[in-house]
Image (cartoon, rainbow, N blue to C red; front, side, top):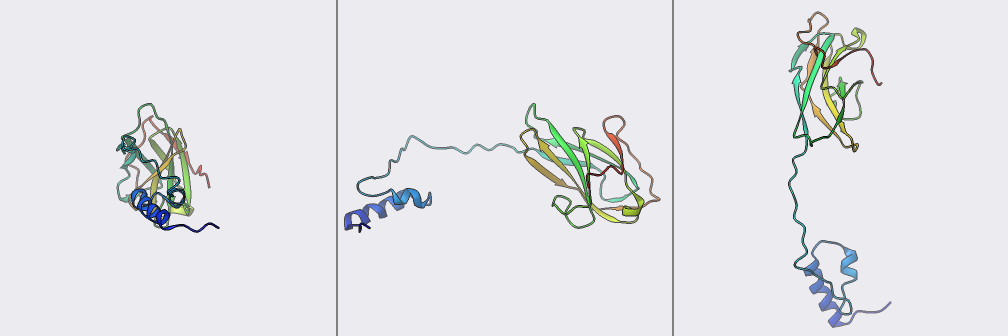
Amino acid sequence: MKRMGESQMKTTTICAKAVGLIGVIILLSCTSENPPQLHPKTSTTPIAVQAPHIIIDTPESGTVGLSVTFRWRIQDAREGETYQYKVRLDKGQNACDSGIEEEFDAERKTCLSVDLPSSRYSNASVDFAVLATDSQGHRFCAQGRRIVVDPLHRQSTSCDGDGDKKKGESNY
């Protein structure tokens, strides 16, 4: 292994200051025989792009019946992009994580009415979320507020033709 001379160490130190935290690979190639090529005219400028996100309209926090309607919309969606949606239910604390009880496929619709099985959800406190997947496979999830399922509570809204009615058709 070749030892570095004093001039090579000075050059390496100067190169390290010029390179910063880019990485060890660049630093290793930074010697007096091979100084770094810094191009002041070449630069990257970060561009702020508004990422799409889900706004959940219903249900609001509170009590719902065994027949419940979920309604949402995408804000800042990319033009021409299509999304696939799933409504996720979790008796735990986060319906966006992987440990959920049930997931209902809404396909491309932004409203979904579901008949929940009373054996599983009667008088249960449930977190819900809407998961969206774009055409490139990017996923994002919006957590709804905690709801309580009361079998005696009547559903107040429905999708009125812009969604589907699912009856215990879960993906789990």
